[in-house]
Amino acid sequence: MSAPASSRARPAGPGDGTPEQIHLTWGDDPARSMVVSWASPDQAVRPRVRIGQRVIPAEERAYTDGLNGQTVWTYHARVHGLRPGATYGYAVTADNDGSATDPFSATFSTAPEGRAAFRFTSFGDLATPNTNWVQSYGQSAYAVGAVESFQPLFHVLNGDLCYGDLNPGAQPDVWRDFGNNNQASAAYRPWMPVPGNHEIEFGNGPQGFASYLTRYTLPSNGTPGLEGRWYSYRIGSVLFVSLSADDVVYQDAGAFVAGPAALTPAPPHPPIPAGTSLYVRGYSGGAQTRWLETTLAAARRDASIDWIVAQMHQCACSSSRAGNGSDLGIREEWLPLFDRYEVDLVLCGHDHDYERSFPVRGFDIGAGSDAATGAAVDTRRPHPVTTVDSGVFDTSQGTVHLILGCGGTDANLDVFGVSRTQLEAKVFTRRNRPVAGGPPTSDPGVYARADADAVEDATWSARRDTATGYGIAVFDVNPGTEAGGQTSITVTHYHAVGADPVNPATGAPGAPTDDYTQFETFTLIRPRSDGRRWHAKQSTAAIST
Ligand SMILES: [Fe+2]
Image (cartoon, rainbow, N blue to C red; front, side, top):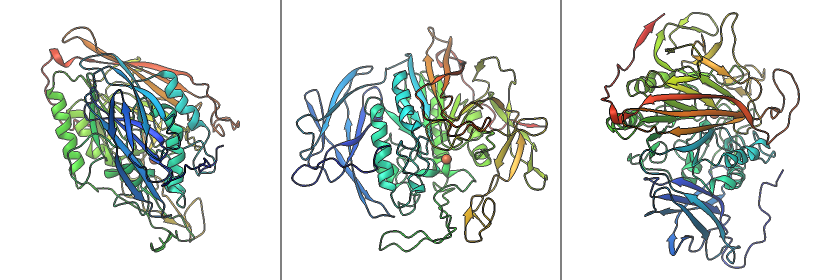
């Protein structure tokens, strides 16, 4: 695969300001604004975007990596005053752009205004195609190509972007390979990310998000000091709500030092002892959940918004056995709000597979048990409103969860839990600290992450892809034709059979592939909000088993 660092000839003068890692994100109003972001190897001189006759100066943001001491230069141009549903050409350059005579140029399209049909795509856990890096794999290049093949209006990227934290001496170089891989799509249509556990990096800010936050300019959440971590934006009749689940999950999955050696950063930072983890649960002090309730309530008062799609990295409904499973923190903190405000769809990553839930509402009390002792544990198991897999689901009656951690890492996790009679899910119900000397190691100086502490029968699990851990979900929004009528989203999941490095079911070795074929399709329906008086639901319709 490609080398980790550029060997391009540098221009004469004050460093190399050649734009790279060029990517788009929606501005605060996706119908009228767009943000163009990029990085350059050295500080850029007069970084700017040209669009039509306008020249828009870019804001500079830099950070110095807390582990290897490298300074990263990024640039962000906010383009306002655009027309809805229009396509624009743009160019990116600087005075010290090595390609100044023929600067990078591309096109983008703004969002439509009002109720309109559009397509978006989604996956998470992408990594980079540079196999020098831990967790990187060639499939991540084909995954970017898959986005382009479906030509969505935009792409939803569900966290664990590049796994810089697992390559602690070279975090900025991993991000660079990630950005340059994505540019083939993200320079042409917005890619909207959320932070995952692998965006939490030692030495890079209070939650470890400095690299993520420096590289992305995202819609405002109006929360001083916590901008960029969560946000919402509206496309047509759909509100997208992007959440930072690291704030609420119990599992301890940020950067940690496995040992036996300490992690030694560049001076002047002191060594980080083996067993240290960066656990950020509760970092917003409840601000994110308060913002979420305010945002959802406003959306349901708005007769022009039909759909609410939530995006987060970790999972409330995953039955991956090889991966992490589900987390009680999300179920406690956010699922009651998803019930009350009829969130239609939740897009996740984290487990490197594809899984779909039935529509769920409320929860079953006392359905879980301790993984070690078998004692009863209340996992607040989401309650399926139907277990008939009809292919058409009314999400005004229950929320559908999709696990889409199927981007491009080298660690497919498409092995699912089964007890003697039922599908089974692991559930984290308490903080799990890294364990010294535990399985799979017996070295007392080496730490490993503990598995989930509880299990439950996964009555909510509707469909699991056991053929491969790689794929992409494609969503087509049909706004409907009349006030008070029905609107729908058709979802088709395409998967890359044969891409698993080793197929867990057959043991057959695989290789990266561009051959994405249909796995399943289903349709979500709900009544339009312009002909309906909406009433908040009970917050937690508990159902005893
Ligand atoms: Fe993850």
